[in-house]
Image (cartoon, rainbow, N blue to C red):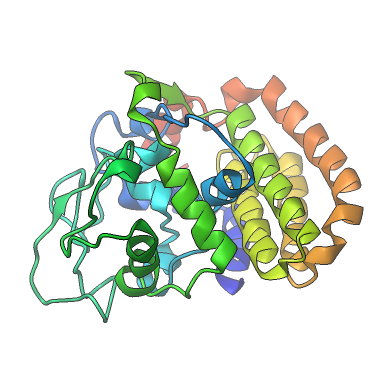
Length: 301
């Protein structure tokens, strides 16, 4: 999509005055902001299968939403970090306090907007699959609720059948019994794994000849590469940023021809792994390091 291509271009250019991370735009200002951007709640995933992996990748991607939410790069993960609650989420257009969001905001939706500022606490999705109803309308179907969040609440395109099935399967797989206290760090390895999992899910969709869903998953993988790029200081990691940006562009090109993924993936994966290894050896010098991230945010890079 054009918005991701633009995001990659801006990340690659990285002017000194730009935010370090996109997520700064929806993270509450505080002395611990860098720490908040460097960890996430532990994901309470009880199991996984093809549908769950599809949903997990799309949940983390900015591909689902439309309108202003798409332009700032919001995803389900932005509010529901690890499927739980991002207690640091604060977007002035959607709320007044961290951890709250106005689901009937006119900023996010022409359909749902009610002209009243009434933010509510972001719900924890662990255990959501066992609930009898969802949202303020007490919708009895999780499938209908998820679709309406995408289409009505955030002006996105209706998801494909497999995409919706995957999102619902992922949410149902978030089991409170698997939840652990504390948080998990955001790392190079974790970001690279998200990219690989999205591509594996895309590959399985191409095998099912569902090219529309495969294209969405390629976007999710491309977006994951962009999130790696923005964690690399521009001067110290110029070659790696350039290589990753090129790899992301290649995924973008495949979105119009997902059937080529199986042939393209081995060489793409080998190049991606090589860049990731180089970055991992110097991870302490990246914005995955919360102290370095805090300094960069303070200095405007």
